[in-house]
Length: 550
Image (cartoon, rainbow, N blue to C red):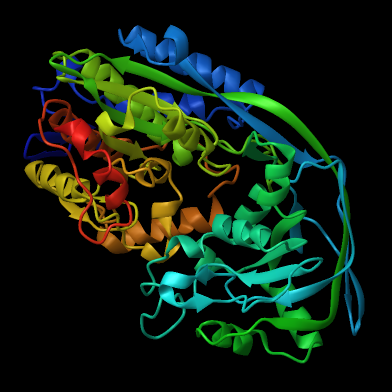
């Protein structure tokens, strides 16, 4: 048996056991693995919102929280916070035809393109809508950047690039170098095109700037969409009639037909003087029916009431949803199990709830929140943030957990993106106290800061981070860790193969959970308030409520 004693964390036979001084026997790696196995099982059907899989998930979480002695933290003394949404999905096949100078081409939904809509309508019918290339589709006055240059997009399809203009340039420009800004996110691009009255948007998929392959786009793009409930007028204004993605190879063919080189036009789009390009004689016709229905999904909320400062809160969160049942993979598996993403995060929130409940009463009230509909645009987190169960001005911090590793222990821990928030330094400090290191996000170009639930809180001023695994594996170092991460995102991200297996090694998962516990315990019993640093776009929102924390 291999035994490694490191600070106060003991690694025995590949399993991480927290120090004996933690309540409840410390972080239990087998409990973490067991939670993932259950939540990612076929029985839970991929945990899609508003399905039988959600019901099983919610009941499992409530059962676990109740067994730990935690209290209901939801609405009206319940364990849940209802989140009213609209679910929209294609009712039948989508028929799409691309007309070019060289002839017409029938497009296959899910292979050539993905086609969807969130507008409140029974069907989408577009006939010969012209295609216009609008570069990265960004209007950022504060960065002296406007890709649209006054172009009228009414009745037209906006073709745009994913990420932002600095991703493939040699030197940083208007968009912070390779660290993706919010302008690089697909959510922003759809929203901006809608503000400009476009008939549709097609984002050109490329694996590196998107940070995931076409299989992920297909999985997401052929799944139901969700949106917050809006008035019909608001929904019409917020969404284009058609939205989706296209393969790069298709974009190359469209550009070539117009006498253009795709890469050359992309290089032009990386400069502020870029002007939109009408893709000569390229038009899209598309027709599909829609099924829209009001649904109610749920955030699951448990709490541990605080003592002397019980009106203040610390939130531990993770999203429980995955992508449900979809098209069969090469092995015939239709369940997108969501084991790493994000049953691991939910398992950590459960285990933190158990350990904290076994210990002394904290000064601040602790909330353990399993959020819904993250994969649909951070909807559960956004709903909580606008309908908080504890006042945001008295919420000290949100520690969100995403995608902890099944591949054993690492020397380091990381957080997503560069948040310019004191919590990043706090995480580094507690890691060092356990003999570990903190690694800044090594993949800033993926824009993870804007892709996790903490962002819904951050944009309203609450200090928040998403904690994720490091790359520096104890066996194999950074090279091994990076290879495993790249393989996961290439092969299994949002796919059926993101599944628990008997070879799961929870050592790293447990060690990382221990660090979240350490930071959470410090926040729970501290009189300090985490802060946004100078230069953070969220600092002003937090300062507006400073008086409530004096």
